[in-house]
Amino acid sequence: MPTTAPTANALADVTASDSTLRRFLHGLPGVDAVGLEARAASLGTRSIKTTAKAYAIDLAISMVDLTTLEGADTPGKVRALGAKAVLPDPTDRTAPTTAAVCVYPDMVAVAKEAVAGSGVKVASVATAFPAGRAALGVKLADVRDAVAAGADEVDMVIDRGAFLAGRYLKVYDEIVAVKEACGDARLKVIFETGELSTYDNIRRASWLGMLAGADFIKTSTGKVAVNATPANTLLMLEAVRDFRAQTGVQVGVKPAGGIRTSKDAIKFLVLVNETAGEDWLDNHWFRFGASSLLNDLLMQRQKLATGRYSGPDYVTVD
Image 1: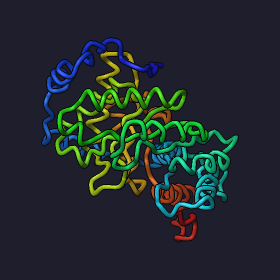
Image 2 (image 1 turned 90 degrees about the horizontal axis):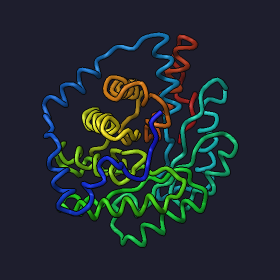
Image 3 (image 1 turned 45 degrees about the horizontal axis):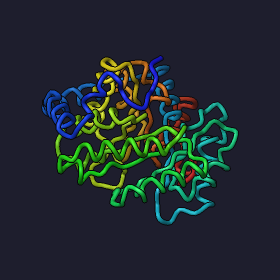
Image 4 (image 1 turned 45 degrees about the vertical axis):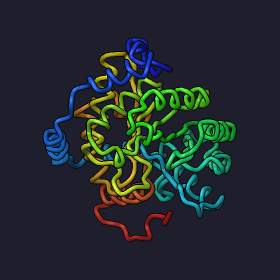
């Protein structure tokens, strides 16, 4: 299986200077927006039935980063979320655990205790999430605090202002510095695709993040109007596929924000299978950033098992 690495050696020369990096990123093929959206829409019409649907629902559950990122988060809420991640359906212990619980850095220790011994990872947003408007030293301190508290994964936000101003090397250097501060923790790099304006920018950000050593590239914070869409996720899946073909390095993808139903999740899994391939159909390489999605997956899972829909009180209210 391909592995992740701090840099892609095959492309190391393109990051030697601002000009070489700019030349490379602006030399990437332009995105056919109409074609991209048409393909995403077409793949979204694929019908998944019976046994395949049951498999897809369990796979989607196992890929959820169960998330709470609110100013009103309390230790009690995080403990409850951790318990749900470990045992999503208390009436059916065959339901898989989620991939991770995602919280703010000050809640990492609480989450770590809540999922201890389960295999569920603890992810923490950092780098002045969600806007990323802070000095690099502050961002790195944020990361180190999260890792010291036990975070297995760190979700960072890029400096969108620097990226949109064409200061690509600044964004690259920040990602490299954050990756180093992560130590053994895996790094997810959030682009906030809804603020990048164009598909060409999303493609450039994807390659920039991967060149800098991202273990995952992630669409969104979930805090803006436009978050994960089939089209922007398809574009990022194409990027990780092409990056592995060129470098041998495999990078994960995490769409986040706005994915609320089992039907939505299955559409995204079809995108993964048809674009990047089966190697990405694993929670080591694909995640959903979500809070309410898990409830619908559990209700659909019970429908397949019993033939009837559950009432709204079947699942916990997060």
